[in-house]
Length: 153
Length: 153
DNA sequence: TATTGTTATACTCTATAACTATA
DNA sequence: TATAGTTATAGAGTATAACAATA
Image (cartoon, rainbow over all chains, first blue to last red; front, side, top):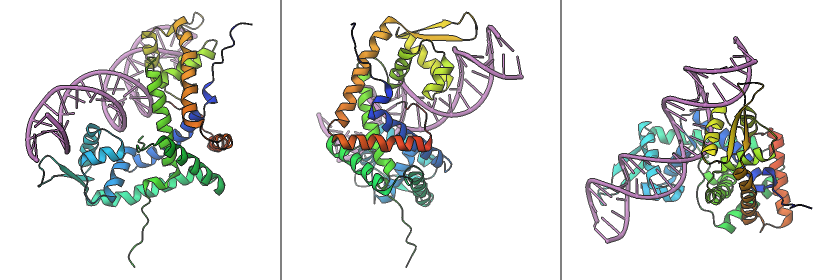
């Protein structure tokens, strides 16, 4: 017989199915938050500022797994939307501090609710035990591969 | 007491963990195929042409869950790389047919091997049973939500 | 010199829509 | 007029690197 090389099909990979579901969840969420005028990356950004006492672009870039350049652009957009403010640090004049405006702080709970809704849409129909299994398996891969980046988009 | 509104944290959502893992898998794969000079979208494109007897941009757009415009650009790039060819259909002069060149056909098995490797890197360390569970849960969400788009990027 | 941020460039994918040619 | 493809434009994210100001 001739070479019987196996060319695996797209759907034979677990990564494929993971991406199908993950992209659907993310796109659905993106649509929801777009109605509130923000992107998924902006939601993550705002949610982090909500918890942070005070945080600079570099720290945020580290936390979000983005470059400082990307954070700058994101911050510009959020300032444009009056959701955050940028201040100089008096102690170290190189450093900036980013913080939520009142409007930004008011928006976060609304976005958090959308995140809850979105998750429920996709996963609430799973039997409780399956949901726990899925979470456990995903977290085991995260810790095994030491994944630390916040996923955007 | 004051309002005890719960602002859910990023990591409380299953969709968050799904995205962490999915993005890591995809980015790892993107890095691998980039070494072969293609993107993930181009891999999907080539893999589909590998099976198709003859296929046009519209059909491919449908199958890949992309717009025809996006397919056109993708096809331009792949033609530039001499991996596919575009022909006019003699029966219907509006229609085009896309097909692999010899170089493109030769590349697909190499990319398929990378996809296999990538999947193995992330999932082979899971107990066999967990892997089956993960696949079953993901597919149940796919069928429940009737997801049909091939995930790119 | 090293660090903090910003800015610039280029590339990929997305979305929408205008446009051409053919049916 | 409807359909097949292409092209144009704009937005969002990624990556890399140049750059200014400060430490």
